[in-house]
Length: 350
Image (cartoon, rainbow, N blue to C red; front, top):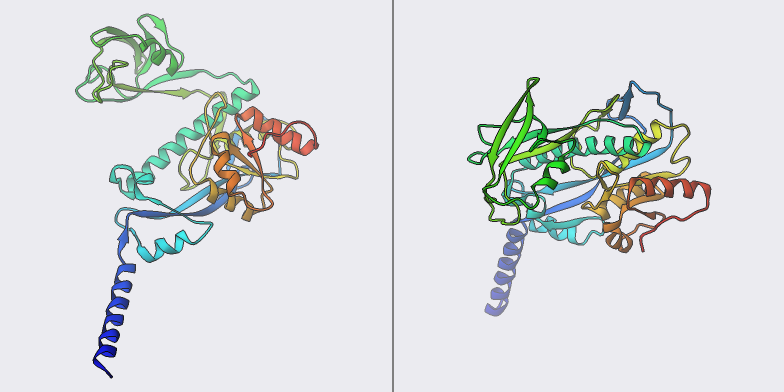
């Protein structure tokens, strides 16, 4: 073998070794794939109703109102290698996204899972409230202290679990009552909070301060509040280890369906996604492409899509899947009814 040939051979081997080593290098990206779908009108992994309602008449339904999920691989401590990331980039059903989109501020997988669980629990509460509001079923709301920030005015005065009943003598019936009345306040203003603790009513007068994050538009007291809904009957949603807020719309639809005669989806296999507010507004979610793929694989022919996700969804719509734009819980219900009736307007993603 000539010296030139030997040199090329050695160089080729070195390039191959470097390429193989490089392919094993961890990269700060996360792989998103279509996850499992679950029928909100069906049962969970334990064979129990995914949504169970007690204390109120319900109606049976064999239809499909499936929520969709996305599974991810990678992240701090378990990063993808370069080869896997390249494979994902070449797969139309997979998304490779920067690590910080799933793990903000270098959060661990455990922290992300805990936050997803918290979001799922909050989503279920909002979904129940939205469904009951849609059906005109009244229920009271309590404003509770969720947390208190150390070193700020509420520290040592209010505690998590306190029920806020009034602000400056004016009754408080929902969180917006407090946030709305804080508008126009200046740092140094005094605010008197009336609250209940262990059944006893007390008052705390707090002096507001400038926001620690540098915001100057609104002063703060150093307390995080949340609404707690007191429903007139029990609704239990059991989805196992699924997390995040994106199933809210589908939970609300299922609750409405169970509490009303007849079948909302009928013979139409409906799947969808979207966050939900207690007033019934549908919000955008992540992983829309993977969720559509999961829905179609499960057999869905109609996919309820948040309005803000419509543009991305329309570009990646799987064959055989009809995209229906869902602005609110009511418009989603109307759209499904019109599809089944074969008439009336059906908002679409275009």
